[in-house]
Every structure is written in C-alpha cells, then in structure tokens.
Image 1 (cartoon, rainbow, N blue to C red):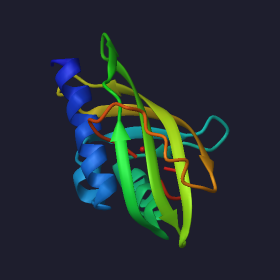
Image 2 (cartoon, one colour):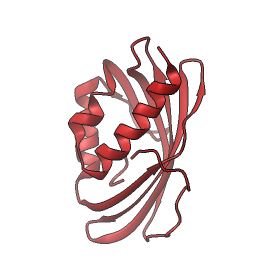
Image 3 (tube, rainbow, N blue to C red):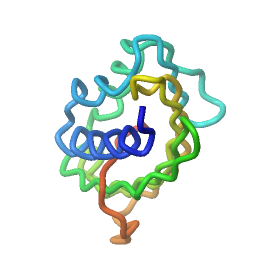
Length: 141
C-alpha cells in the first residue's frame, strides 16, 4: 500500500463527501472494524456502521459547507491531515478547524481515526490555504 496515496484519497474523499454530505462515499474509506474517536474524551465509534451514524448525525443542521484539507503528513502507515470548514449550522455562520490522525491497513483503508477540532460561532473567513479535501456540523471525520 502507498500510504501517501491512501492519505490523499482520504482527504479528497472527505472534502467532497463533506461538501455534499455524502456519507456513503466517506464510509467507503473505512475498514469494517474501524474505530473513530472524535475528541479525546468522547467514547469511540466502533465499526463502520457506528462511524456512518456519527457522520450522518454530524451533518444534521449543516448547510453550505466550504471544506478544505491540507496536504497529508505521512509516516509509515499513519497520516495527519488538517481541515477547515466554513458553513451554516442551523442557519448560523460557523467555522470548524481541526486535524485527523489516520492509521491505514495494507489495503489503504482507515482502521483507526482520531479527530481534534474546535468551532467558533462565526465565519472567520480564514482558510488553511491548502486545498485537497475534508470534514462540520456537530463535530465530526
């Protein structure tokens, strides 16, 4: 597996999937037994179906998302990818900025992901400056 290619595909798919709220496209990036943790003190989502439910919930109330992902940083089978989203959350401007850490299996599927992110209740108008892909709403990745 080429981790760099898997990480770029992860970022690109998340960007497109988040922009269009396409949970099916996003969840195809994950192994059936993947584990996702959103923020350090929340319980993990275990398995592809639980992750899909979380992503769907995260998109609830969100409209007009503008999503960017930075170029992935890759080491071995791991990647770190910053992301930023400007959107309307239940009609109010919001900005979400964060980073996802991904571990890939030999087939390039995500087996473990962990997000750290923060939101502000306004559109900051600031962008990461890197455009390749990823993840707002109640967050989410």
